[in-house]
Amino acid sequence: MRSVSQQKEGTRSGRRYALLAAFLIALLLFSFTLSISAGSSYIPMLDIIDAVFHDDGSKLHSIILSIRIPRAIEAAFIGANLGAAGALMQAMTRNALASPGIFGINAGASVAVVLLLVVLPAAVPLHFTMIGAFMGGGASVLAVYAVSSFFNEGQKEIGFALTGIVIQAILASITQMLLIFNEENTETVLFWLAGSLSGSNWEKIVFLIPVSVTALLVAVLLGKTASVLSLGEDVSKALGQKVWFSRVLIGLTVIALAGVSVSVAGPIGFIGLMVPHMVRYMARADYRVVIPLSALLGASLLLLADISSRFVYFPYETPVGVVTAFIGSPFFIYLARKRKEETDR
Image 1: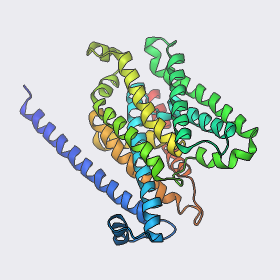
Image 2 (image 1 turned 45 degrees about the horizontal axis):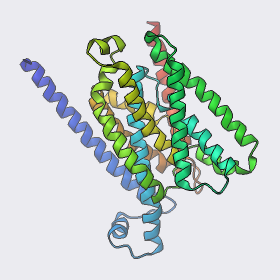
Image 3 (image 1 turned 60 degrees about the vertical axis):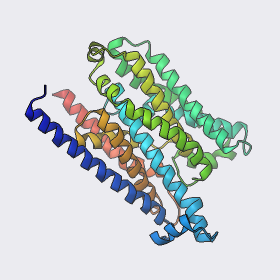
Image 4 (image 1 turned 45 degrees about the vertical axis):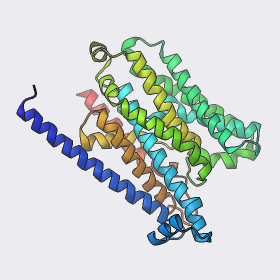
């Protein structure tokens, strides 16, 4: 039986999580609306509502329905995917600096897309390019798993990180080689490699939403598993968890979340790194709470970053990946220094 003090503490924690979730939902709604309104020209909310419910085929309504709304939806889902994937990665590897990129998903997807555009320029359907990027990211993850399996059981977390870094470097070199020998196709690819939402359309949304919704639901259901795994391998085994099975399941979920995001918008970094830390700082909870809240905050953060990308070099557009890198690089340095100080103590 739980004591009265434990019950009160649980009630307070539940209220705090509910308030935080309500705040993040409100932030998401605000960011989503602002993303549709802001741009080269400001669009009032009344015009947006009118376009949604009474489309008259005008230029303004076409811009809202064909460009602004798909872009906001894409940013929200990709941000949610990367936030949840980052939380799962940090739980599985027990590494505060882990993010989806540690599996080589970004590098694998980049190689696949560049290869397709080089081998079949201007002849690759959009959905085929996206599926190719998804498969490239998945293949790189399998390579990370295969190589890291040679590490001892007590060194699995280190093995994932080191193997991911090495494979990323190899794949990045292959991508650069393909670009160097095929300069006529570099202009199209380079913008994608920087991470961009400028080409958003309903065709991409139809590909993105089913995979994202399914993978996000699985990620939330894996919250308890991730919490146990984050306690360490020995503790996980003592609690009856099949560590290898949990890692495979989490890995497949990360592939789905990050892979579909990279295939749609290119490699967008640092969202998966920053968001779980921010959520844990605010909530101080286990991953049953951290994962869904990371999805909400990730969606809002990428929406706000995308809005900022439209005004960095106005009237031209900056890839959103550049904005997230500008925000995330100092955050990464801070985490690395903090981790070093904790190790030195």
